[in-house]
Image (cartoon, rainbow, N blue to C red; front, side, top):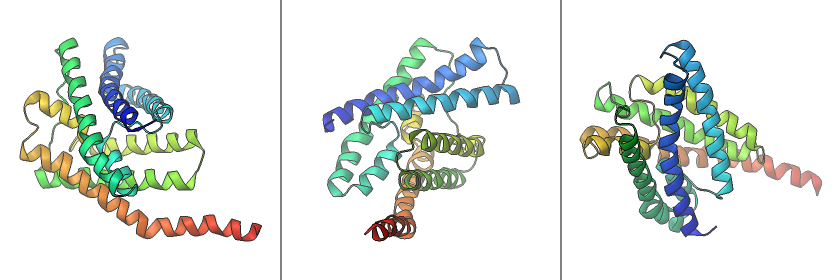
Length: 237
């Protein structure tokens, strides 16, 4: 699939990701009638993991379609200058556009739906929270691509549980989003997409953390994984 195909995939997956989150909440709290208590949360987490498996499969089918600007940024940085420029100037804006279109559609279909994540702490505290959560999930994601090659289900399971756990840790503070594109969609609908709060917490903090995580992984972990891969070859020879 060429670059045009990737861009189209990014737009569609970003649109679908917003809708998936909304539909999970409607299914759990509307259709099943579960309250926002322990039981309701467990059921919602189960459906969320299923949703993440579906999107992981869609990413595989589309040969790299993405719905999170942070993933696109990490991929662009690792892929060289051309890939970085393509990610920043094309893929990330398209993913944001997909999220905005999805939120507009959601609000049109379900006017009573929620208004997305809200910051419940000071701006710098929120930026630090989103940054730390992003740092760990990027490190984990990059590590899994090397540690468990070819094991799609195992990698998806570990990543899904990790993302869900980090989301829970940050949910009461910032929403535990780790996806500035999705947050941008809801913020745009509220007219808050250019506020200092939104830009610092949901864009600057996570993007700096992504760049730091990629650099940290390449310096600390990449040489270790490469050495382990070279040793078996040497023995075979």
